Image (cartoon, rainbow, N blue to C red; front, side, top):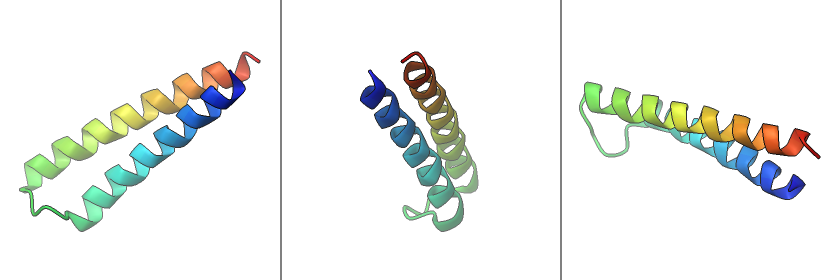
Length: 60
């Protein structure tokens, strides 16, 4: 279970990094509002995945 928690933490951090990448680079030339939606979605997903992983890891 420890490794599952660590893996989820890393996946959450990766989602947060992807959100920052979309915010600053905009690789698909999306409009401003579409980039904001993608960024908020990735931030929310990353935070949720990170804390679920942290919860699983701390149970051990």
